[in-house]
Image 1: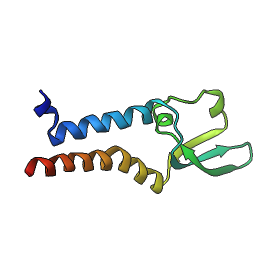
Image 2 (image 1 turned 90 degrees about the vertical axis):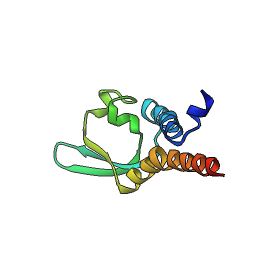
Image 3 (image 1 turned 180 degrees about the horizontal axis):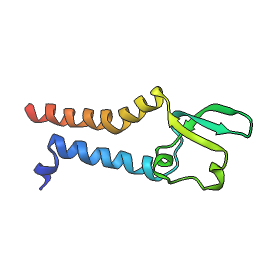
Image 4 (image 1 turned 90 degrees about the horizontal axis):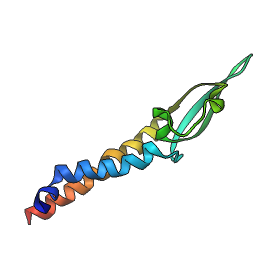
Length: 102
């Protein structure tokens, strides 16, 4: 059983899930993004840190979204999310592959 888990693909999947669960289920504001506020007369874009949980509807209330038109991650925030969700598990899986080859 342990030999099956210590292969690169299961390592990648397990670490991706372990990293993604807290990022998507808890409001941890790590990623650079922008919030677009819509007032009666104008629209204001404010750079801020966002959590991935906001995109699936966890971590905020409806009252907080009253004047918000939209929110999104900027390129730097998307890159950081990709590094955490794909890059780090990929490096671990690659490390397991290199260890197995010796």
